[in-house]
Length: 309
Ligand SMILES: CSC[C@H]1O[C@H](OP(=O)(O)O)[C@H](O)[C@@H]1O
Ligand SMILES: Nc1ncnc2[nH]cnc12
Image 1 (cartoon, rainbow, N blue to C red):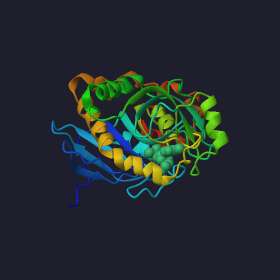
Image 2 (spheres, rainbow, N blue to C red; image 1 turned 90 degrees about the vertical axis):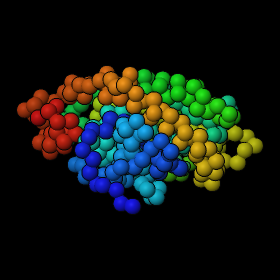
Image 3 (spheres, protein in one colour; image 1 turned 30 degrees about the vertical axis):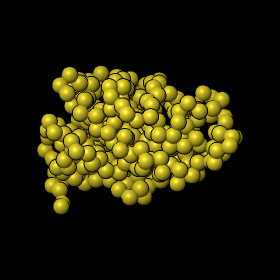
Image 4 (cartoon, rainbow, N blue to C red; image 1 turned 135 degrees about the vertical axis):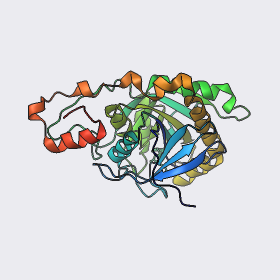
């Protein structure tokens, strides 16, 4: 069945699905539109599906690696993804990611909420909206939205994982590497010495761009393997990642769905509208209006109308 290509109401909450979650089918959600959006930064990874909760609140869903996982982490059009989501009204993002565990106690299939990140990408991805004549520096001391993360933690501890042997670990350190090859054993051990808890290839520049676009952003990670540091364990393979992802996919979708059902409640309206970060990018710009590059101003006007013109 083909869905309508337009949706007129603003949609405030989005899920960015990663490895193993390229659709968000759940009893409580009905797909009501599929949006094919063009941005000044190109097309996003996939059409944006608008789903409705039983209570009628809309949610946007975007598949990070494309509908068939055809985009490598390096190729993901992060600027287009974030710009497209913001253009339909999104102000808060729940990103999902499959991660390797760097700590014994974080077992494959456990969930992890990171609060910090170390950037091990190689500077070959488009990582900012501020460029070519418009200089801006946003704060990134805390790369994930703490309030949004607390809501996820509360939902997870309120019974949604009950009856499973799956745990949720909070306040963890995520290493984001370039890929697509997995790490060497020396790198994996180095990250452990740095205090790294989990590793992926996708959180950056996604979270940086979300910050620049004034979106509240948090990540739900699912551990799928022990990377390659663990003596006596086979080093990570795609087969291991996918195997654990599929085996635990129902729990992952149940957790994401429960978080969404919570966030659409009236009491979280200021949070999902990201009122607490509104205006932060407007005042991050150092370039005087007279000196701003016209091309960049045009793109930024599309992204955040009224801020830089
Ligand atoms: C298939 S293993 C490596 C792949 O898995 C993670 O994807 P995502 O974060 O989109 O769930 C990791 O970041 C890599 O892209
Ligand atoms: N070991 C690993 N390294 C990087 N990204 C991953 N995603 C899932 N497992 C991973």
